[in-house]
Length: 299
Ligand code: ATR
Image (cartoon, rainbow, N blue to C red; front, side):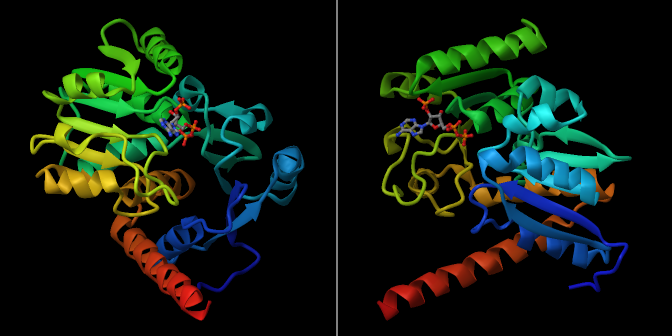
């Protein structure tokens, strides 16, 4: 690690829990690679301590923040300025302390957009099916609606999908083609036939439920790009079955890296070293896997 001095800019993750976060690894690798005098730490902050934590950020002059569960919405009332997309989406995952004013951004949507582009997939003019209507889907849907020919939002609780589609139309105008429906086989079968991109923004398939998948494998095909934002496990059942079906696949680590890269660029004004960040994350994940295996063997 670069020598920490009285001038070092401190960035921090605030969430609950943060113990297993890869963000410190990813961000410190990037700072170090570019020789920047920044350091990134993580604070476990409960919902009841959020206000005090933000007072601390102001008092200590902490330079940048990442915000994760469960504070992405509740943080908003403690900030001074919201960037346009954070305001629209109603969620903040990045804060910049600019001249003692806390400015909130969201990089979840642009993270997904850049993960697609990095994999050589341009969402412009494409039919995109997104599963889920929670916070992550909201950010991704708002961003991709501006590019897609057609965006279909499918969710278990159909009302949430309908609300999200309406919010997007209200914000972006009737020109965007956004539809909503229930996350059910009949809709998946119909919508996936001629779709170009499928994004899983639900938690279906996440550890410990990694034997689950949101989509029957016979609905997947080789003209699809399948993007799963889950990164634990790195290869979800959906990603595995998509690969077998001949689809192009993008995993959740790519989302994590590109969303982190966008935060890095907000804090530093420099281009993020995406490859370095990805390698650092993979190394850490492999170490954790070995450690967990070791633990199991010991038991
Ligand atoms: P996030 O911020 O990660 O998006 P969230 O806001 O809790 O988290 O959203 C989780 C998403 O996964 C929701 O779309 C949720 O569907 P509901 O709106 O119906 O709750 C979806 N989800 C979670 N578990 C699910 C399951 N077992 N089956 C179907 N959808 C599920």
